[in-house]
Amino acid sequence: MLLNNIELDIKTKCIETGTSQKEVAERIDVSLPYVNRITKGREQIVNKTFVKMMDELGYDVELTYKRKSAEAIAR
Image 1 (spheres, rainbow, N blue to C red):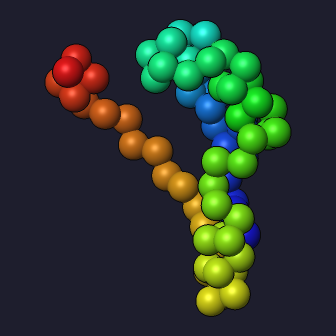
Image 2 (image 1 turned 30 degrees about the vertical axis):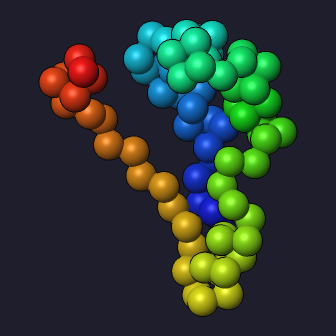
């Protein structure tokens, strides 16, 4: 089972960093509608088969997010 709510996590991180979804889309060279589909849960970004395999093996999947250093962000 995937323990994260990826859609909410992305929205929260955008708010925390003061970054709009449009800015994220532009920076990573994807369309705003694509980012919107992800944040609304309409686009699968974690492979279902991987999650099922880990579940079958007795594991839950939980993503962790670690803020980059200021130096890494500046690059």
